[in-house]
Image (cartoon, rainbow, N blue to C red; front, side):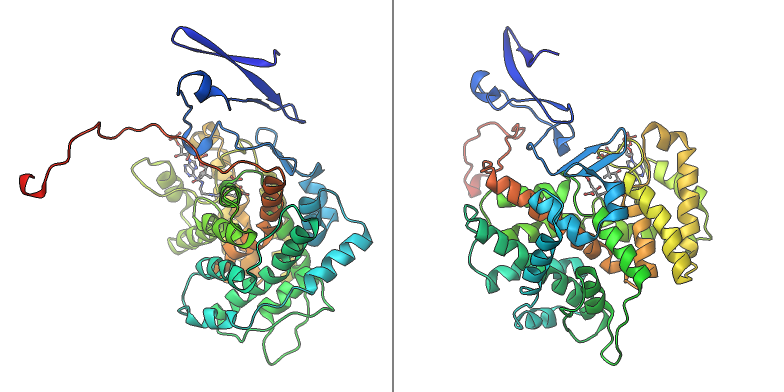
Length: 428
Ligand code: SDX
């Protein structure tokens, strides 16, 4: 294939270089388009055909259902690694040695306390505040308590900001859930691992010794790994574009949390459970809901189905579906919505509407069933997604800043009124 693309506009033909990635993806580099063509730009709502950056962090192939973090397959990482190892891999580029991982975790533990005044912010929220709104606010408030901005040219400064948010974020996540459950806010222990501390801070009751359930710990580890990064999705693109104005890491992550909240994105895991519960309440009539999902007049969508990139199965959904059976079985939990979910999947896989549009279960379709079996409230499901995605957001923000990417500022095509003179009020 030639290494240039030719574009004809009117009488003129323009040439643009082609960029080839390490997995043979090809992009047209159009950074000179507007200058050479006297102002012509491209337009691509939702950026379905537009790359925002080159990145070395995550590779996914939507046609083949491939997902790799720094070259390692999601299947192997979910099976053989733990979440902190994967966080290190995404952020620093390689799997850590034992010494590197121990130092990383000790530095995180040294930063796992938040300013006690944050409790006053939590107290100010109404009890039924949605946890994603609480988490986004608390994360943004970290800037107030840790005002020094990150000097990205200093490796030490960048590292310190990373271990600070890796240490404090799980506390904010846990305290968000304890606020919802009306429990006192407390901390983990240096004797426990990263995910074990999340469990202790989330679930421990004030009047009992908390025992770590290994089934829940392993399932949570796997779920967090599966959510850790996913190249330029909506919330990660938000973190990158906010960070491109040189806003701080905490502020950029807070913006990413708000983007993730939407039901078309990370909020889908909560919407899936609410949908499955509605179907169960309605007698389990999955055919009725499949009909609603296909009816263009009906705003109802089959939540947890479809994906912008995966036009084949979402490899994470395959792993989570197997884990759902295992975890519920090991915990002795019978949840009828799991059977409803499996029924919906089977019907969709044999339905022309879904097959023609390549709509398959995505990461959000089965994850909530496991969270619920763990005793996590449905409003907290997307918060758990954010906890998993944190290392990916950090890695992407770090890559964007270290590469000194320009501030994100898309163009537009104006489609409003042409010039018109002002009309005084008494003449309108
Ligand atoms: C995540 O990008 C990422 O990587 C995200 C994520 C990550 O890890 O960061 O993977 C996490 O956000 C997963 C997606 C969670 N969202 C949902 O489950 C919500 C339900 N899904 C959809 O709303 C939708 O599939 C999206 C938002 C996920 C993708 O939307 P697209 O790519 O913009 O596709 P589209 O809306 O243009 O749909 C194409 C067609 C349309 O029909 P036609 O107009 O061609 O007739 O498919 C239909 C849509 O109506 N369609 C659905 C559907 N999803 C798409 N119809 C019914 N139910 C659905 N779920």
